[in-house]
Image (cartoon, rainbow, N blue to C red):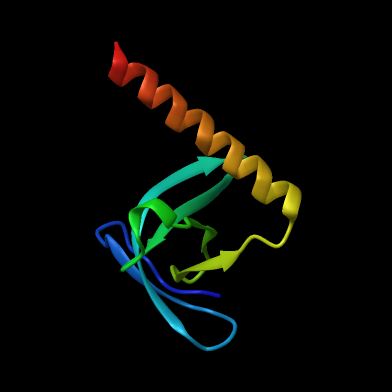
Length: 96
């Protein structure tokens, strides 16, 4: 899975391994453990059942950028846990 992104884009199209393309909104981008991760929400999903797609955002030496799947399950879980911590802190700040 991969696709290009620039800082001004709020939507991207992600190419899945099966060849299908899914248009997604960029929900958030975070830096964690010296990498950048994007949280994407597929467009047209029901809010209650929305599944967020988490991908690594990679820039290569030629100023090209793309998303790539997080293959390591432990890395994926750490990123999700960190993101949840950020979301919880944001909600706590909103309540104050």
